[in-house]
Structure formats: C-alpha cells, structure tokens
Image (cartoon, helix red, strand yellow):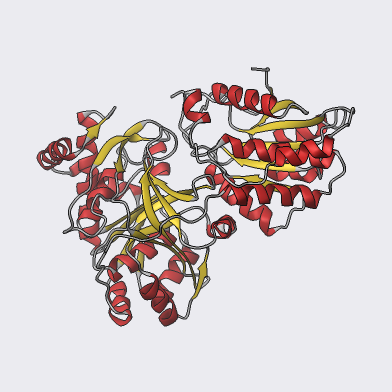
Length: 524
C-alpha cells in the first residue's frame, strides 16, 4: 500500500480482505451506471486525470483505543484493498491518501493542498468520532463522505445529519457495505472535473444511492399478539416508575422527565454501587455463573472469574434498586469501568434485569431510560433494546447494535432465544451479550426528548442477526417501514441511541404522545 501521509496527534482483530470487500453482495440491479456517465463526460479528453484525496478519518492505522470497530483493529489491509479497487475501477482518477484524527489534522491537510491542489475529497469515516469531514467540506471542493460499516457509523450518522441540515452544497454521502456503491459514487468526481456543476455532482451520487437501495421487500410479519395497557393505565404505571442514574448528572433532562412523565430520577454514586458489588453473596454469584455457562450457546474469551464478577454486579444492581424502591437503573458504564469506579461491566446484569421485567440502560442515557420506563409499562414487561444504529443502503437495513440485550423479546414469561457471552466489543474486556433475536416480527423504535416534548419514531421488520467482529456484539437488522432516505436526517438532533421493542406499537405510542401533548417525529 502507498505510504499514508498521516496527520495525527497520536499513534493509532484483523479483518480479512474478503470479508471487507464482500460484506454485502446485494446487487444494484436497475441502477443507472455513473461510470457510463463519467466516461461520457470524459470521452475524447486528453487532459490530466481528476485528482482525489482519500482522507481516512481515523485514530491510527492500528486502533489504539476502545471505540468502534474495536481496540487493536488493523485498518491497513482494509485501506490497501479499498485503494486497489478504486484505482482499478476508476482509471481516470489519481488518488492520494492521508489520515486525520481530528479537526487540526484536517486543517493541515487543506493547508498542504494549497500548493498541490486536488479536485475533490473522499472522507472515509473509519472510527466513530474523529471530526474531519466538517473541515474538509470547507474547502468548497466536491466531497464524498463514506461510512466504513460497523466502524465509523456513529460519527457518520451524526455528521451526515448535521451537514444535510446545513444544506452543505458540496457534500454527498455513501452508507453501504457494498464496495460497488462507493466506486459508483467516486466515479462522479470526473463529472465536476469536466464541467458539471456541484449540484449535478451531488444529485448524481444521490441518484446512484437511491437506485442502489433495494425496493422494499415482503413486509408481512409474523403474528404477535402484544398486550398493551390503555393510555390512562400506561401513564399511571409510568408514574410508579423510578430511575436511578449512576455516573452522570443531567439536571435539565432529569427535571423534564419528572415534570412531563411523572417519573422520579435519583442520582446514585458509583461508590454505592461498587460497595454493593463488593458485598454481593459469592455463592449466589457462583450459581448465576453456573447458569450462564449452561444456558449460553457459546462463551468466548470470558473467564469464570469475569462471569462471577458480572453476576455480583447484577446482584449489586438488584440491591441498589431495592434500597431505593426503583425499577430502572442507568449507568455510565464506560466511564465507570475505564475510570476504575466499577470493576465489572453491567451488561450481563442488565440482561438479567430485562428478564426480570426491570430496566437496565447503558451509558447513563436518561432519554432512552425514560423511554424504556414508558414502553415497558405499556407492553406489560417487554424489554427495550437500546442500541447504536447503523444504516446500510445496499441491504435497505437499519442495524441496531449494542453489547447487551434481553433474550426474551416478548417479555419475562416468553420463550428464550439463543444468546452468547463474549467480551465487551470495544475494549475486548469483561463480559457482554450477543442475543440472537427472533426474526420476521414487526419492531417499533422510539426515543423520548422530554425537555422538548417530542419523541422520535420508526418501525421495521426484524430480518437478520448480523454476526461480524466489528462494533457491538448484538446486531439486529431490520427493514424499515417507509422512506429509507429519511433515516439519514435526525441523528445530530437526537443523538445516536434508539430503543427498539418487538411489537407493532404505533397506535399506543401515538396515543401516549397525544395524551402528553408531545410531537412525534416520524424519521422514516
């Protein structure tokens, strides 16, 4: 691979080339070929090649920190295969490459390009959060922003939505696991080189993306006789709820949850939870570990001690919930674990809480926790699945990804589905859950914003459990109901998490919004 020009303040399980380039083989049948359009635009031209800089938005060639896809991930073979494919299939384009880990590094790239100009930028979002594309678009050159699926998807979702909201005129994007879709988009750089307008460049890429997105499939779903409380009883049940927030104080959101939903929120210290963990009954923890070893379909790279520590964390969560007479707990798990405030991930504990009919929510996310309090009450005990969604146009799927989930999607008394116990994906430590959800059912995804008196809503048919060693362990793929393109537009304002429930809950959710006097934002 050509040596990268690296702009970075830091140095940053390998992925096979075949898996990366063949991650999605969905054909773009019927799509208009932009290669043909570009070839037509350049026919007979003897001028210089179009010059495009690939900018990898990435913390390093080998990932040095815990974030998506995971610590230690080797991007070098991915980059090599990507560049080889583009050079082969885009012969009229000269590619130069750089890496940037944030805005300052991106500014250095732009400064360097003043003496050796390029015609456009391809920004590949390889890690979630480096803010690079926001700088690159300021050059005014045609810019394509592309997600490396299950690696940069969080930043891709949020940054794409923000740039679309700003109506950035030189910005286009690709969100596909099929490399053919990226090639078609990159070929469009030739159109601008040969006199097409920026507007035509962006429109051509949007057309290719839409044409390459499959038509809706069979949206017939399996029967699911979900029993829901009426709106009055749902509101009453919500008001009996209580949320414990550990490791994060958000007074504006806390006050809005209590005012709008009648749900009390109480801040609890890491120290209290950790003390309960230290005092947890070791015999009971050992029995729980035995149970997980028998019930899990597979356990990989998780020691017996880690299982027992995780069981003790579940017992600690139950003890703290009982002490404060609460039914929901949300923990800043990453900050707590990395800061040495807690000594076991709460993932397996949350898994058990869901199966008890209680609520455990990740990352001290009060918006999602309040959503779960309401919808678990509404559905009389069904668990919510809080997730970091990924968008893949090549399959027309939204993939809900997180390292914890219930394995009783229809409630504590329902039949269990298979699950596996693996390390927490981002740092390869602790224990987390891969739940292999039932497929063919309608799901409803919601998130509350009590301080704005709004909720966001979409639905999708569960179609696949994705198993790939990038990003979070549980990955439930759904085909959304509605316009797939609309899904790209709200992540900056609503952040990344969504909460997914099995069941067609549209009618009772909208009725609840009416009773609260809230607006529903339909994101698809």
